[in-house]
Image (cartoon, rainbow, N blue to C red; front, side):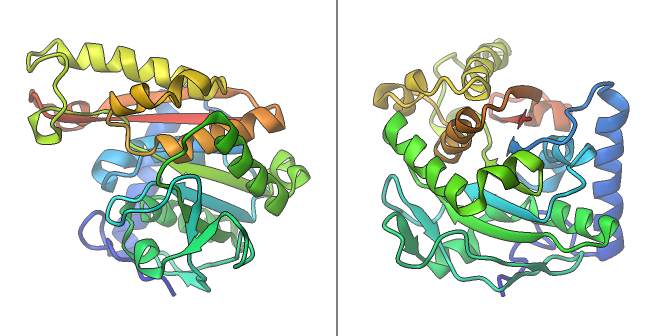
Length: 291
């Protein structure tokens, strides 16, 4: 079993408080967005602590498909160096959350040519965990099991690699299952990390920096939503940004193209919007949903 490593720190470990906070996040999104994306098949969601990511994650669960019974979560690796163009996985029977267990399933066979196994990397990665309580919340509300598979993708080096990894997922889950809404794939990514803290200050440290970052981020989000991966996977472009989950996002975007799905940028905000403060250091969050 993968334990809820960050419960009690990145989000509350109290069952009632967690259920309430998730319900409130979903209601706020429903109340403030008159036309939420219904029945998304694929998603890109943030992965900071719930105080920051809850708003972005909630969009996916306002109108989650009724038929859903399997979810794949793809995330970057923040703590372990991993090879490019590979899935890093672990055999997990169940995922613990304060809202109950989620049954695990194997996305790829253990000897798949693009699969590596690293139990420690999967155990420690917060980018995998932040969405799991939301999935468990949906499972409790629907009273039907939702099985989960997780994988880390460190880097994608080309459009061809993104398409190959996407094809692996499509083959494993079945295109018909993805198209019907019984299976969903979620890419986990925060967007630009800006400021001296992140050694990234191309627009200086004044209040205008956030506007420049938003412009850059929404350009990238638009390309991901429209599966225009070529400009995003040029090495020089990848070196110029601090979006931590561009690799899993690229794979999901390539999968959307294969399935003929249309992406929508459902939300964009920064940590400054959450805290209501003015700082030269901030992190941006974006939600993209495909249907």
